[in-house]
Image (tube, rainbow, N blue to C red):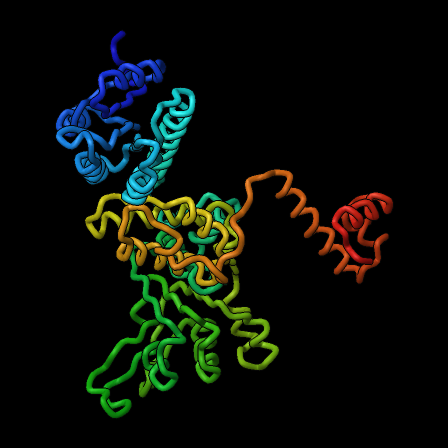
Length: 454
């Protein structure tokens, strides 16, 4: 039968004729191509794109050892990083199997060959290859828009992106709220890129990073001779953003005396440089961001309420990474691919312990922390497989890995809902039952089920 684009190709690297025949028989559903040594295997890989291959570590000229097998493994990983390699070893070669996986092999299998079990491992590897291909295809098909840099699959973030697309074309002042590291500046630049001002400049200033004595001149500019060292007239950030967007990061740290001056600019759209008397009109769209609770600062008289309402004509909140279901692994793999390419290394992979640690960690530093940890792991890892240790995750900073057991997940959610309901009503069972939408007898059954004390 002729090959088609739908053919499922499998490369079997094995020098023993008997095992070659057995492995051909194992994989009836595949188009099996057999190679007896490293040179033949590499020649076949050059001709075809093999999603999966099996590799016997004992290859000639070192059929009784493993040096040729490991050399083949490392060369395939370097030249064909997308191919899933299943290493076949002897029963007493656990150390070699673990070493192969650490180098980047997908999995290992011990001789003697169990055709059904090996077939399962190969099918699973093939399915993973298909999923990764689909993920790459979807990623490359993303529209070329300013939100392209926002990689997400969570409903909360997708809803936020839709909101940004609606808000961006207006000239309304936008307040972006979110914890440190969630990507507030990225959202601000997306707003600018989707606005009618996209051809103009986008000028950013971090209100927390500049000393109070310098911040006014940074924002509003200054005239020559306005103070010691002012040798020439200098435009401030506001004036430099004319015709574009001004991004005021960490607006909650803006010193109180400057808040009145910023408020005047927002109301009248004119500025006066430090040391000047001339009013200068500025056409600029303002986007602000903060991780602080501005309402709390207002109650403490540290932030002007009238300025808050001027800044928050439209408010958007970026959810923290821990609330973005599924995004941790999506982002982690994107960062892994980016930094592997940047550092000129073959593609790294996350081990099972790394995936579990990534999912269970709380991510107080959000996307920025995730990116930094992956980048450091790529630089520092000794093997191609990234471990939880490489990510510096584990121990006290990481909780138990998340379960995939639906019953366990349902029971955990049910338990949390009951606790929340009881805490809301001060332990009153009838009111808690009403909140949960269940009868009082059902509520008692649930309390007994989870051994709550009433």
